[in-house]
Length: 135
Ligand SMILES: [Fe+2]
Image 1 (tube, rainbow, N blue to C red):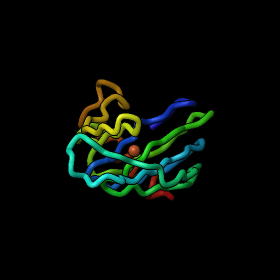
Image 2 (tube, rainbow, N blue to C red):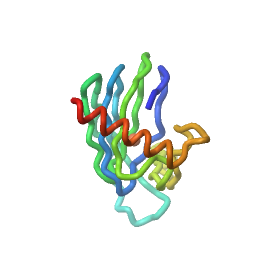
Image 3 (tube, rainbow, N blue to C red):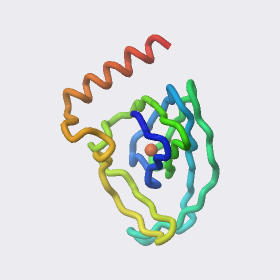
């Protein structure tokens, strides 16, 4: 994944998936959040930031299932690899808005070309396996 300078993701989770996020080039800040509501209302989530984690080349961040977070690239382009049980866009992510305290679910297809398909996923997974096996 390549992120332009100044890009920032929405606050989200990766649902039930474990994710390895490995930074190859550039630096990012990963914001982590926790829920402070009692989870009794389905479209309501009160969250607060718990930490900012700086990541750079060689750093691999482990994102646990349902861990709420956002990534910000800062002033430079970043390049990262993602290893996850399911491809992005193939499952519903949790989305969080701390201002309105609304939460919902959405896919993440906007981060990939519109012609992204299963063949591309297999090619990308193979690339990641080859790359990581050489580390
Ligand atoms: Fe994420």
